[in-house]
Image (cartoon, rainbow over all chains, first blue to last red; front, side, top):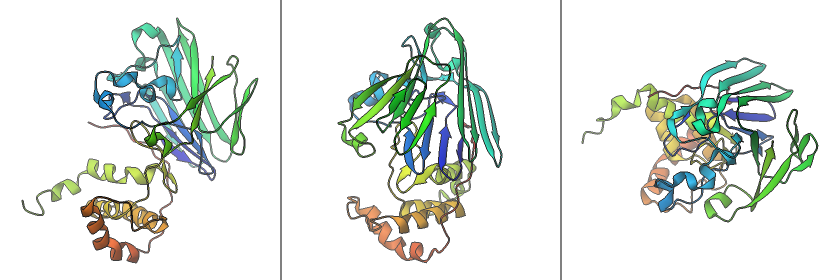
Length: 199
Length: 115
């Protein structure tokens, strides 16, 4: 789904993890504000022999933990067409865009996810609300990928000059800096990206 | 091979959807919504995108590609190393310059994958 208003541009992917040139990104989303990257999809590094080998998903950019998705006690999504979103429902109206989906099926059995539902509601001119609801036997930690250094407070992620994200229901926020040296990634991004963890 | 051997393919809905995908995913300047191995900065359009739009009969893509090419800081693609692409660009410049339609306004969209 792609939806926009005067300032925000949002894309959300459902589908599965069996795409050509796949990343394990089922359910992830990308957000721009005023044309600036807000919540990003990193993309891919320069291709190497490993990129198209059985070890493809050892590469960090392919992993769901480096997309805007949760891991369950560090267990990430799995590649393959069988690892998919289900019950995908979309409403596109003049003032609202909405997508809901069940994402438990994108994770392997050892993640022990009974249900993981994501709802994205874009109210034009007001903002975007993303609600993740999980049930299962492991603890969920949501990753969010950013291209600017965030300022964190107890329940707020602020990107100076861009915007802010209010966080409700999560634990203590943490941030990790990721140094970018690969030339293909540097063509799109600055020398440091940031990953926020929301337990 | 006859020049029109692939002509029926251009009328296929899936091919047209592939062609128009970039117009739906464009954000601003050279930035695009990117998933999988695609880059967030995919560059500006040129002759190839314009001609793809013509081939599938997409006003959306021809309008988008021509407007995007005109907005490019380097419409002559001086760093392009593919000789065919450069010749194709030269042969298409006049048509893109004459294409006066404005950049189409992006609309909300949802597509289900199809086999």
